[in-house]
Image: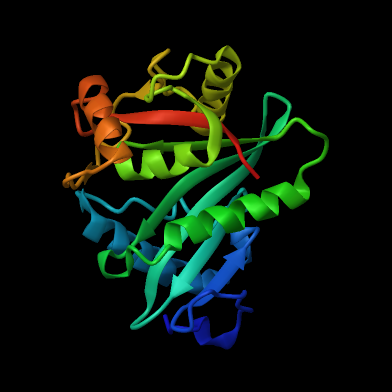
Length: 237
């Protein structure tokens, strides 16, 4: 797969001169011939960031299903970052679920995760109607990812930073998890998904600031590396 996807797709505005960015509100718009090479590249990034025992994205569990949106970032020599997301209706509100975002280590620290988030929320805000606001959900056991996502929310369930529990957010967590992962139980009020990451293992690192507090909470709640927290918040847009 070339850096510019053979020039057959339109790029969007990029804050970086050395990155080409592609955005698909409907991921099924990616040509079938491009899907497997892209999946291979996405799985290769996951295999760098995680200890993976099998591919995460497969033909049976594809990021190119029409229910997903997809943002791709190309640099040298090819795909360097991606974000898969899903737009839903939860608790009678527009909801965004971050299905997976990965950035190669040598490209981390340049603001790509925040760029993905702003692009996704901007598109969601344009589609929102009424004043109910947007729900924003994610699943992770990475303290940095949890902290980054919680930072853009007014409140989050589960609360890891001492905020009072929000029953409406807890209910939204249960509803969203059931819609995304039917048959997989969610332990309340911790919003724990057991065995969510049986095929990949998070690389632990030294955490600082808020991430260190989140790491301590996660270590208490989900010491098993296969477990994850499923979280939903009120997004600031």
